[in-house]
Image (cartoon, rainbow, N blue to C red; front, top):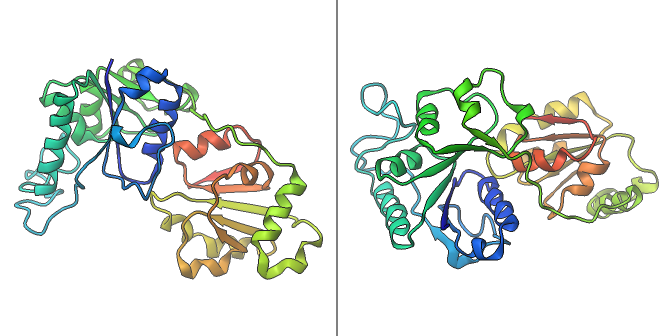
Amino acid sequence: MRLGYYAHHHGSGHCRQIDKLAALLPVDARRQLIVFTSLSSDAYTFTSIDETQIVSLQAEDECDDDVLKGRAGKHWQPASLHYSPVGNSNIQKRSHQILDTIYQRKIDLMIIDVSVEVAMLCRVASIPYLYIRLPGIRDDTPHLNAFAGALALLAPYPRLLEATMTPEWVGKKTLYLDFINTAQQKELFYHEFIKILAKLNTSNVKDWKEAPHTIITVIKGYGGHEAIDMKLPELRQLLPSAFIISLGPINDEMRYHVDIATQVNDVTPFMQHSDYLLMACGLNAVAQAYDYTTPLVVA
């Protein structure tokens, strides 16, 4: 079966999700997979998927000459869509890219992670699709229509995390995949972790004769880190003596509220050996943190 996978461009988590799924596929099936995304190669580098299998989509940003903006308001946009500009050349191009590639490469089934608009495009074009569900309540009309139009729904998290208010028919239509975590990183001992911190904290080497009493690691991705950054001054005020580490992007003015601000390839040691974790509730991060007993606060 030839599969197509639409990965939303917000953050790198959607591309990372299909990268993990692809790693679980047999080699022959993996080679037949086509990924559609407008996320740039600079923002995420695939490890399980060859670049020839990636269709780089036109962005869906609004244009100055749109006839109608993407969220024109009641009575000016279909209730089944979240975002539907009219006369937008970007969306016209990307819609053609998606449909033409599906036809030319004879894709049998699309998996959509996530976009109500791409789901509706597939349904109107009579293309079968599965829809990826994110945790939480998604009971607005566009989401429910996308769910209804899918052959089935996929939830990359345990059934235990299902919201109690989820409609019964949605739950019955959902295949729960549990957390997908294919990373096999070598775990470090605590003293090795402390050595890493000492190297990163070059401005305060003399303080590393003993390990800090309380280590808090703040982990952020590229899907909107500003909201967490805004909490850093309050975190510092509440815990003035804690050693606070910021991993991922950070606003320059917020660097003064943390002891280390850096980016790393492997967050596993920080998840394992910190006293507390604060992070965005992206599925990939939560799936990785799930294996450890470190107390977690999600934003």
